[in-house]
Amino acid sequence: MDTQLINELKERYGIVFQDVTLLEQAFTHSSYVNEHRNMQLSDNERLEFLGDAVLELQVSHYLYRQYPDVPEGKLTKLRSAIVREDSLAKFAKKCHFDQYVLLGKGEENSGGRNRASLLCDLFESFLGALYLDQGYEAALKFIQAVIFPRIEAGEFTREIDHKTRLQEVLQKSGDVTIDYRLVSEEGPAHERTFTIEVYVDDRLIGSGKGKSKKLAEQDAAAKALAALKA
Image (spheres, rainbow, N blue to C red):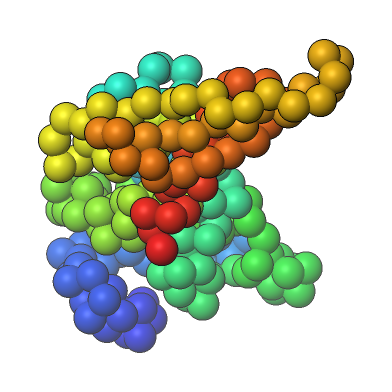
């Protein structure tokens, strides 16, 4: 097992595997196993199956608590954006997992170390191994360190409408009154432009335009979010 990986997991995430063979399996791709049959190795595909289920449950639980006013359909879209292939591949790279995965020569030469599908599977395999080695809470702690901060930073909020996101941000400190007010309608009937202002407790925080009132409200909420972030 790569000692550099063991040291990095300990230093960055406080993770020390009790069963190092599980960690080794998580980082062993099937192409490597096929080229080293005499070593009787196990690839990471079964761990990926388990890690996928652990990840989906943890992300689902987090979103359910974090967004109490968001309907099921939008929560599903948000979860899909977080656990989809390209997202998990980015998380795997952020953790430097791409540097440690064991690949066969053919897979290595064809760019497998940077392939999104392979890195996604690798991330899930590691999570499955961690779950088996140390349980649900340890896996959750890792996800809290790697994934949840990116959600909180707004990396996936395009999957939730800006009005909902603005409401969540403003109501973190308690109940507030949010009001969207139509300021003007311009242009011919077939090509109207609406201007909407959004107020919180009668204080103007954003203004937006759109081809419909709904689009103008979304634009106003997006502008308000940007102003609050600044």
